[in-house]
Length: 262
Image (cartoon, rainbow, N blue to C red; front, side):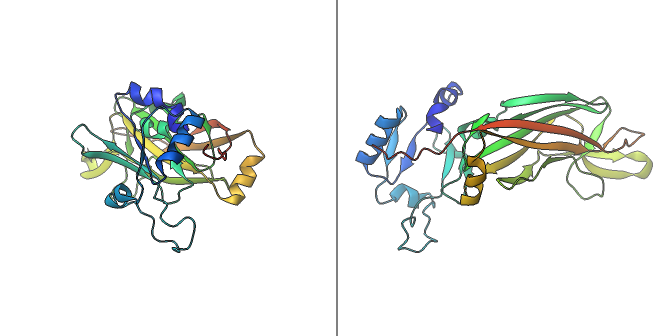
């Protein structure tokens, strides 16, 4: 359903879409007819494709009704059939949204800020989400002329970071950093990893689908996902005081679709 709601965005970026499930063809047809699904859905009975890609979830008790449910995920494949990107979760209840995947290319619902040291825009991939969906918070940063901020590396300086405020219904993932460059501070003959050119940070967050989290979220119509960009900027002569720029996004909540397939 979420993929269908984003189908125009997906095809608009020149991508195709195929969904693979181990459900029987009749089950998939009933589901697609009742939900208005217009992209192809492949029945992988016997889980041959699922096994070939190493996605069969065989860690559960074989007697469990969830045994064999594949790890949910998305492959992005080029025209030659070569996998270019992968987006996966361990729990079948949790999914990357299409907007999160497309958001790796930029875009989303966002805000902007301008400080003494840099300009930045921050966005979240989805303005509406359900428990179990994985969203992406993206920050595009442009240091001002002569400025740099510190990247992860072999030094003790404060690394620029995207902090997410803790919530009982939210699980943040690790921040994804781009490749940095080396800055040579000549007075100390010191070389450190920094960002001097425009760069992007991304941090994924999952709205939890646990019973406890669903109970908390079920009483709400929207949630606020908040945090901050924290950094210390320097130029060739001065290191400025650490700075914190708040970011905040309101995400409307939708319920899980619990209707039977037909």
